[in-house]
Length: 164
Image 1 (tube, rainbow, N blue to C red):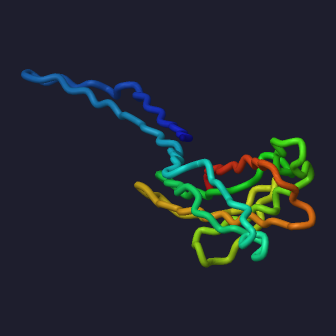
Image 2: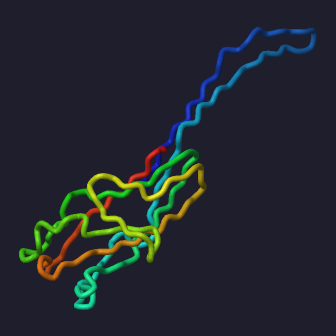
Image 3: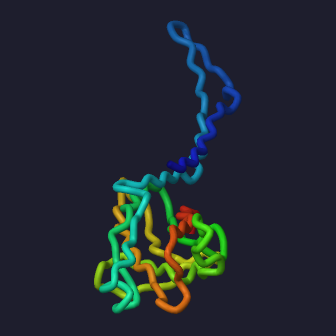
C-alpha cells in the first residue's frame, strides 16, 4: 500500500480587537493547504502462476488474471507498470538466464490489447479525484520452445502511482 499525505494548517495573527460595553471580539483567519493525497492497494493474488503446458507452448503464451489495483486520490493521478529487472530470475540451474522481461505482457482487459513489460514505466491508466477506481490487470507470459528450458522463472512487476 502506498499513501502520500500532505496537509498544512496554520493560524494567522489576530486582527485588531474591538471591545464594547458587554463584549470583546477578535477575528482569526485559519489557512489550510491540502496537498495531493494518493493511495494504491492491490486486491487478489500478487503471485501469478503461468503454466507451461504443451498447449501453452503450442500457443506460445499463457494468459492469467493478475491483481486488481485500487487507486484513491484527491487529485489527478497516473498508474504505471514496469519490470524491476530487464530479465526474469531463473531459479533453477537449467532455467534460461536471459529470458527478457518483455516476455510478460499486461492488459486491463482479458481480451484487450497486451503490452510488453519493460524496465521503463508504461502508463496503465490515469484519472482525476476518486474514492476508489479499480483497475484489473491481466498478464500474458510468452514461452518459446527453443529457448525456455524447464525451470522456475520469476519477474518482479512494479506498479507505481504518481501525480499527473
